Length: 340
Image 1 (spheres, rainbow, N blue to C red):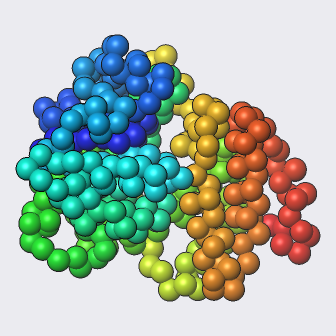
Image 2: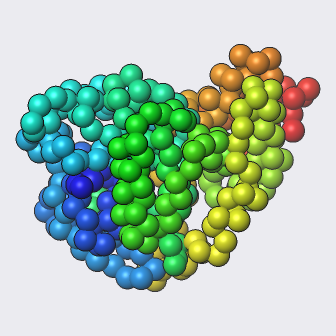
Image 3: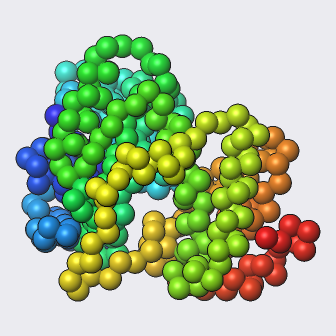
């Protein structure tokens, strides 16, 4: 199989780079200065095991690849706000031997949030969810850092929707998992991948806080961090949505994903922090916004998640860097009756 990584940033670049290191065929899809650097010098993958310059083919668009192959697997690693347009575009790509990507190929949603898989079903007949635990950083064109060892991450896979038909697709998921597990990852295959992704969503609710406040101020904001998660738990419980617990995750992870200091590498914040740092858009609409939407549907107030979605989106729209807000400013915006 060839793995086409659509969105070769922190997560996509780490997955693609590790797969290439393990001998798998990989193509990277990127844009702008990052694409230019990938084409000129290759992907510089920095890990606790060392730094390697990987010459991986890099493209801007599926048209650059020509007809896709029937053994291609699309790994979607763009932010959730870009999912719809990317899926619509890639689903129409021609596949050698007949048909389109949406008809013939499988798309793996290696993304945060829980809306991407359902969106993919509009365009692709075969969809696989991936719950991504992979601390990685992409701040410089051409460079991706994966911070943990001995594993770079745990990538839990499962068919979407749960209980989908067809033995061949189950065999395909097993084959993908085997390749991923041979590339410095663990890749459990589960029947309830969305339960794991809802559990990850609860953890990602703090992304907007980290980006808005910066990592140093986040340490002084445990009340806000606890409140944003508590709202998420209350909403999922009210909606009857199952989610994996931190205890379950740690039982799988153990000590196999330890953050290891890397010489001359500063570990930055998470994905939303990095988006603000790069002056890009943020995916809070699909993280905190997901909880706000479900809260409205089920009559559960979510004032802190509403605030964080608005605030980090404002910072992105105004081109402000991470850490541009203070805990005091955020607390002041919460009504006294709902202030944590």
